[in-house]
Image 1: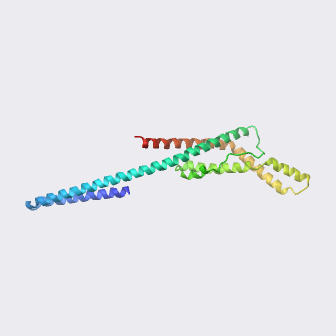
Image 2: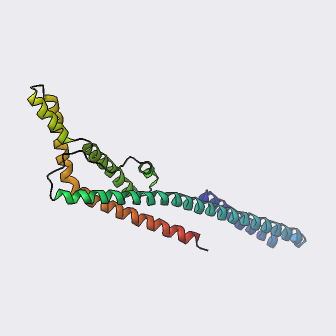
Image 3: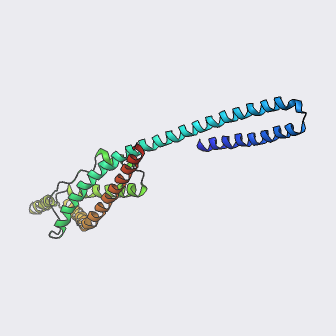
Amino acid sequence: MSKKLDYIFVALLATFVISFTVFTVQFLFRDIQNVDNLTSGILSFLGGSAGAFGAYLVARYQMNKEKENEKLNKLAKELTVYAALEYEFERVVEFLENENQLVMIMEYPKNKKKFYQVSMDIWDKKWEVSNTDILRDIIFFQNKLKRIRKSYETNIDSLEEKKHIAIINKTNVSNINRELHKATLERKIIWKMIPEDYEKAKEILSSIKKQRISIQKIINKEMAP
């Protein structure tokens, strides 16, 4: 819309220049008796052009103001999402920091473990994040956290106990054995990735904080009197 207003202004300016030139030529080469009419015509045209140009400036100002308001509203909405994500990732980092410390002293946990809840409303609002790099990292990491949570919901100790009982009772242990092998392998893979996941979570948290601060500065600057 802004470009259309620019085109209109250029067209009005061109019309004014051409018309003014024509009136001037007529003034120079026609009878002096037409001077009053010519002068009146020029003044009327100038008045109309000035009015049109004024309307153009007002329309342009209103358009720019509306765009600024839309931008501020979008940033304000996005700011709340970043603030919530920052809080969430602080919890993620805290959780993974604790797990990372255990990696140094434990082969891998076998018991069922409580895991940080990742399926919260704020994660669904990640689509309001305009920074594509941060959005990509959040999506990737959310899926990774869901995988960890799913693994932690399995109690390997319990499966081993079921296998032991099945062997004693001489029942079919093949299904339990397959489930135990799958769960153990997945837990080992996840456990090896904990240090890397911990560092990645800190990196994402840092990016979210920087983006939140940047947006907050823009909003404060635009709203300053």
